[in-house]
Image (cartoon, rainbow, N blue to C red; front, side, top):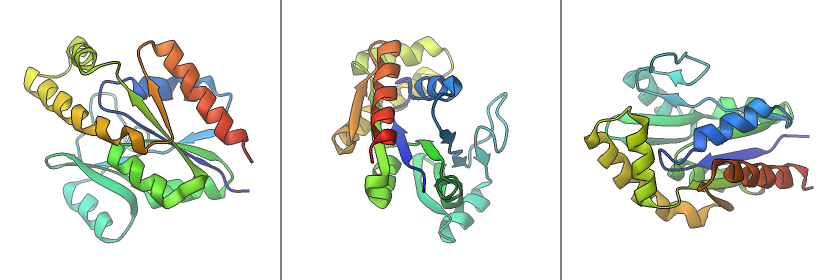
Length: 190
């Protein structure tokens, strides 16, 4: 039997990666993580094929032209992210469930392609003000980048109604439990 697909999307700074990491580290579910491709440079500690498939601008565009992506998006000017078709199909065909950490438009597109075989979960901040506070608290971005991310988040929140499930990350432990429950219900459904 083929596996199922879990799509998790959120604006930057909403805790999506933390929630996914907790669920994957727990190891109690048959979940494989889909590694996305990007044309950005690796951040300190990131490894090709582990955190992302780091592609050159030319290679990314070539793979887009070849139809190798189930979704891709120019998330920021000149900054592309995408999900390779081969990454999803190999996991699903082997019977494993796969979890995708992708941008909101990509999540909507993948849901359209995989329909009932997929569950889409949207992680939301309690408010835009709280999201700004979290991004500032990271201490990793300039004020200009934070303004850009907050502006993009306001746009991305408009996609939330197109997702199967919405989780507000006001309290991390509660958000993890709600996300796990949605995944468990989906995986065990016939």
